Image (cartoon, rainbow, N blue to C red):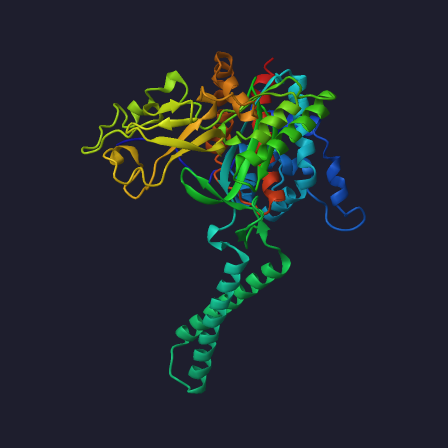
Length: 517
């Protein structure tokens, strides 16, 4: 017969437990402990507590900040899950000194950090600077759009909200009439059905009250063209943003990253999905942070800034030139001009260039038109002249000269199908980029200067480092730390949460590179 060791699940053990011994040297937990204890000035929180004489004792801000940073580093974002970890996980217990704050205390603490979080962020940057983890010569800017704690179905213009409120009132009126008639006639209905109707009435009344409150307390939001854009009842600071996975209601989380160890030197969550509008505030934030840690008058002078084509505008390029920043911000067509990407279409199906559809043939390109210097126009393959109609048309950062053939020239043309874009088109237009047009003087616009800079061998080499500088930051925060959505509402609270994630990212860099040196 088989024999086994004695097994008693009710056996008790009396062991001495020193929580501090569970924080191992060189670990991220130790770095969090050192940063919070020795390098962050948490006396700023003293002003928000009013329990000097009466009231219960508060958890020390060091305890709460440590467990929140550790939780975010482990991908634990909800306050209830953080509370659970403080009761079950020995590392959380060690950093919290045996305390286990409840979820409401944790959530309230994050909310209370809105006025101090940037100070803490800069204090950690000072540590990075002292440990020689910052290069300070090359910065990369990018953004990541993340959903907010709001539904895009609650987004609408004020006119649409008033229309929705009217429909809800009509529906409520019908339900109340039905309810009154049923009670008056003493109809034999089940209590379940009656209770269900009453809950529905209360739900609609609550929706109407919510819309009324929002319309009374807010003004319509205006876009850049001064036209009204959609507001959101749940979180009006958030916005609808297109992403590769569809449209989301969220925030555009921006980061400015130093090239040496991918340390974030400035970050902010923006309620604007257009990256181009966010370059100016990010540069201003970068200047302020660098000025604080380095005491320099103009800390960005002579530095390199790389950003993708979403930031390419004349205004942004002008701003960088005014700040004496060596910026590399390509236009959307820069890869089409790069010989290294001439065969990129070959790989759209994974292996080879996709086959042409039967019955289709190539359309005439601008190269098939001959320039007529005398008339300053172009001759089409059929011998007709296209006249100049404008010298300056901007499309996606490129300036074009536009030519057009006379109205009836294309109607009976034998080459019509090969020349016009579609069967419904009436006449041929020809767009000639000015910077490639040998018949006009080259422009000196900011966009043209940037294109020349990007197309140079030096520009391509500098810009090639952008991807390796900034994308690993989003990979770490989104996939290693599992931040796939913001759990707070309003820009102030969302920005606090984003800076906390950027804070733990930088502390992780200190743990890996700083103390090892």
